[in-house]
Amino acid sequence: MQHPSGSHTFGDSGAELCGIGCIIEKPEEGGRHVLADLDAPIITLAKIRFDEDGLHVTS
Image 1 (spheres, rainbow, N blue to C red):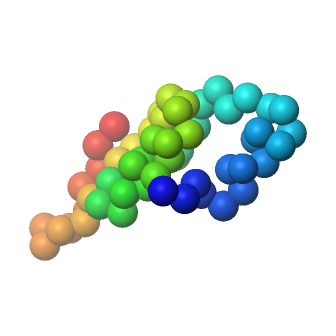
Image 2 (tube, rainbow, N blue to C red; image 1 turned 90 degrees about the vertical axis):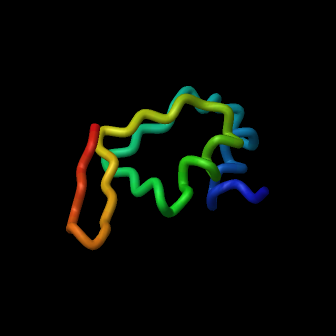
């Protein structure tokens, strides 16, 4: 699986990724799954979902 654009620079710079902070997560798009390979905690402020009833926001 490919890492998100630019993620290879962590190792190149000698930096350590300690966590990922997201303001809004859209679970249906699968971004968390892609970021899981980075082996860092992922913190989300709000998750949003759209369906026939409209917008749903959870924390």
